[in-house]
Image: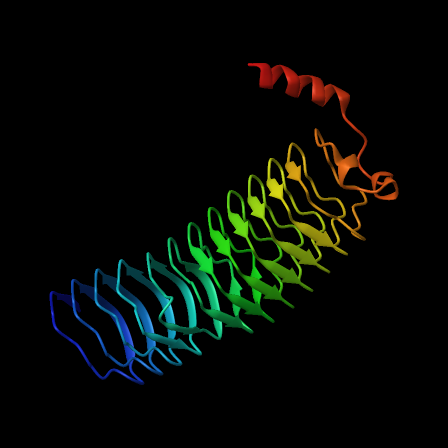
Length: 277
C-alpha cells in the first residue's frame, strides 16, 4: 500500500506484521510501531517525530530525509535498511542489533552507545559529538568522512572498520580494539588512545597533532607519509610497522625504532620525483 501526503499522526500499529508500505510527504508523528515485524517499508520526506519503534524487527526498508526527532528506537533489531540524513540527536537510539544499515549524513550528537552491536554498517559523513561508546561492537563498519568531537570510547571493538578522511578531535579511546582498521588521510587532534589494540591499522597520509598513543599495540601498522607533530607513543609496541617518509626519531624511542620496517630508499626516490611534479 502506498500513501502520499496523508495525515496518519498517532496511528496505532503496534504488534503488527507490516509489509510493502510506502509513505511520501506524510505525517506519521506520534505513531506507534512497537513490537511490529516490518519489511519493505519506504518513507520519503515523512514526519516520523515522536514515533515509537521499541522492540521492532525491520528488514529491507528505507527512511530518507525523514524527521525522526524525539523518536524512540529502543531494543530494535534492524537488518538491511537505510536511514539517511537523519537527525538522531534528540531521539532515543538504543538498538539491540543492527546489521547492514546505511546511515549517511546523520547527526548522532549526544547519544550514548552502551552495549551496541553493529555489523557491516555505513555511517559515512555523519557527526558524532559528545558521545559515549561503551562495551559496544562496530565490526566492519564505514565511518568515511565522519566528524568525531569530544567522543569517549571504552571497552569496545571497532575492528576492520574504515575511518579514512575522518576528523577526530578532543576524543579519548581506552581499552578498545581497532585492529585492521583504516585511518588513511584522517585528521586527529588533541586526542588520546590508551591501551588500545591498533595492530595492522593504516594511517597512510594521516595528519596527527598533539595526540597520545599510550601503551597501545601498533604492530605491523602503516604510517607511510603521515604528518605527525607533537605526538607521543609511550610504551606502545610498533614492531613491524612502516614509517615510510616519516621522521619517527622525534617521537619513537631507540628501542621502538629497532623493530620497524627498514627504510625503502628506492621508494623515497620515487616519491621525491612524484612530489616534484
